[in-house]
Length: 205
Image 1 (cartoon, helix red, strand yellow):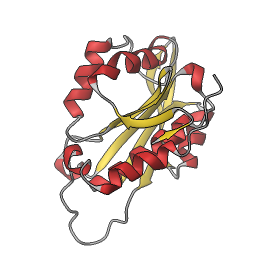
Image 2 (spheres, rainbow, N blue to C red):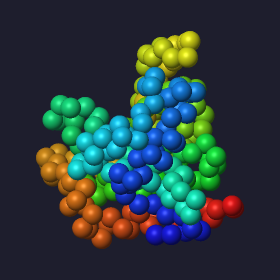
Image 3 (cartoon, helix red, strand yellow):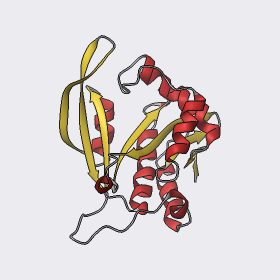
């Protein structure tokens, strides 16, 4: 699971402070997130715990700490949407262009497929060439743009939505989703983490 002192693993409550620190600049200084007040470690831990049974949260870790994280979340609360999940990735500003985003997504998407999800959906505040490139490189395709849907930092912003099919939707009813605890018992869980970790570049520090 380790590549150049880096690895991908399931996040724990002990990672909440690092995750909150990575996320905060996207709230206070940018528009990748439409939140206005960055959550502290306690709030981030609460969010992680609230969805941990159904949706994986993963971190990329190396010897000097957590360098990025990725997670899935509810796309819509209506029951018929349950086989689709929203996905989000954030990378430490000091660690970008090191393939961390692709590595984290590779692992997460494989885990979601293992659980039985059919679609992964990502929203991106535009313009954001880096994020668009990452998602399209992973196979996501643009399905639509909400124009002037959010106002932050003194201006209106568009949000594009990208979708990736994790499995073919056939005529038969989908199987019930596996929760995280059940999926972790399958060999495919570790295979997914290792597939992501294999894409990490060795640390130059």
